[in-house]
Image 1 (tube, helix red, strand yellow):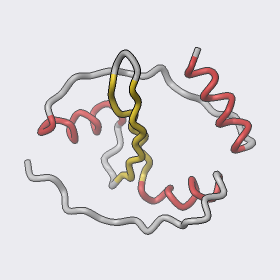
Image 2 (image 1 turned 60 degrees about the vertical axis):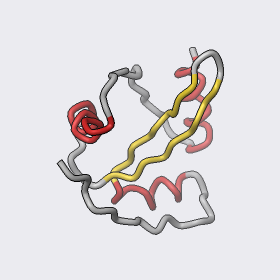
Image 3 (image 1 turned 90 degrees about the vertical axis):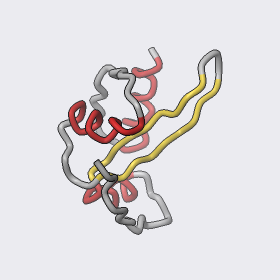
Length: 94
């Protein structure tokens, strides 16, 4: 139900239809996280991550990945007054 509410609110905010997939959960170690994210999303380009912590009966982080080339578009859609300077970090060692 929360996913439907999130899609509805995001749709109203952006003025466009939003399609959200059912969240997938996968437990991986830190060293495997990059490869697991690439495998799960199919994104192999540089990404920008947005995270939001949550605490309830469970604690964790929700992470949204966006192709870095799309960050300015995302900021424009939500009327973000702070244009995003894309900071490139070196790739994690294998």
